[in-house]
Amino acid sequence: MRRVLLAVLLLLPAAASAARKTVKAELGKEFTLRKHQRAKLADTDASLLLTGFTNSPCPKGARCIWSGLAVHLELTVAGSTVALESAASPYSVETVKSDYTTFATLRASKRDP
Image (cartoon, rainbow, N blue to C red; front, top):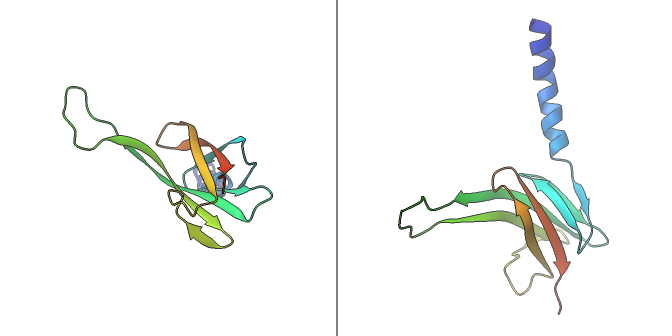
């Protein structure tokens, strides 16, 4: 029993780092990231990091001032962080599907100049 527990404890860090390996993503095609996982956008000098989620739905029957679901991403272009929401961002990212807790399926596209 101790050997099994020791083996599990030794394999946990390897499993965690495997889940965070960089994903190769093509512009215009869907790809899935987990929290703290990075995608390298093919044929570009850009990458996306999934930094976290907002999962704050309004309870049934309540009046909420703030509620919502969001996927938080960090875009890096040529080694510099660029705000995806800014007009200066050369890329846009659409959330195709997410559970807003562990994963998001995304699609990145080049913005028209």
